[in-house]
Length: 85
Image 1 (tube, rainbow, N blue to C red):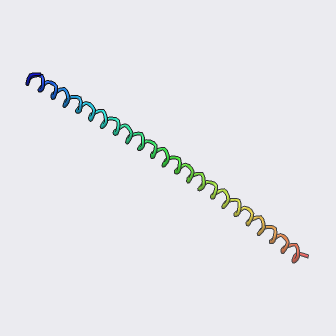
Image 2 (image 1 turned 60 degrees about the vertical axis):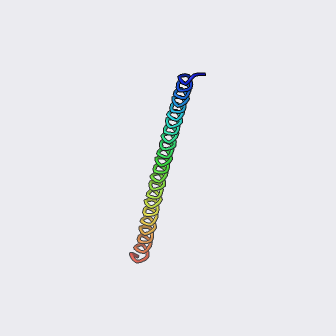
Image 3 (image 1 turned 90 degrees about the horizontal axis):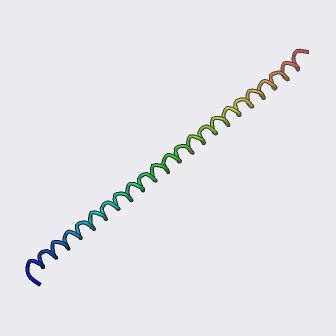
């Protein structure tokens, strides 16, 4: 094996290593992208859940207000009936 062959083999070896490192870097970047996308989707789902909880809380609050108002009106009607006679 001559020096020329050794240099060609070494050049080929370095070329293959560079190619492998490039592929690894590309795969790692793709994986980071997938992870970031997944985190984004999870954050969006958490945001939707929080919004739904907020809407449910608002609905319960409105229901309580309506119940309170109805009870107050009933109490006022009974009071007025008691003292109108």
